[in-house]
Length: 258
Image (tube, rainbow, N blue to C red; front, side, top):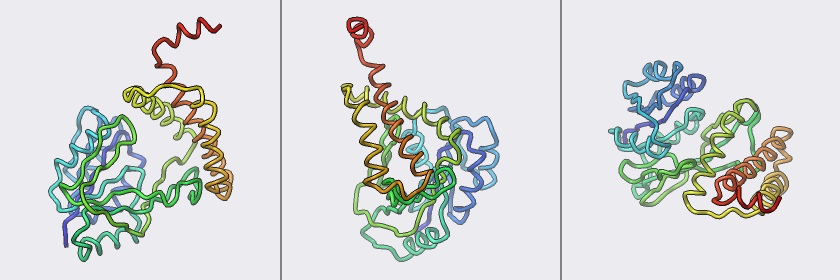
């Protein structure tokens, strides 16, 4: 059976870290890269592992790539602190490492998100497959400002059991992330030299709501589903509005058109 390392990056996750790590305490190794938490995150993590590295923040991808450099197991499972490995997923991972396809170097799993206390089974969020289990040396993280990706070299297969994601227990929690992530997303678009167009703040947000709520059946997720679809449209609007804010010559153009 192949050995397994779990990697996480953290910052002020004392509300999540114990519940997360409790679901992977069976792993051979846990590696945590912390960005200087001011709460009990590090102390709690050290109850589960001594491989806790506190480092200056260099970005999501850079932190995860550093974590990869510290593992010693054959296989790696990466998690966020607000995720939990279900008992069924644990058993499936253990079976896979014991008897899995010798050609596969990575596995995806469906991720089920809990938003405002409800499991979201529509809105385009479920099954929301994510590649999280991979053989050491077969993958690395891109170093995007936000939504970094795992790039895998080799064949990938699918697991069937859910990874549980407790994404936003409250609106207060959602909006604490909202400003940060929309700013990072806009900066990433600017880095890619993406041009601002008015349709990005007029048509795209509306289309996001229509697609999620009607085409992806978000209305079946009740009021939390409706709130999620509205906020997702607002996220798109804010991201592109912030891109417009960074556009060279915006102020002079605004003065001319007044």
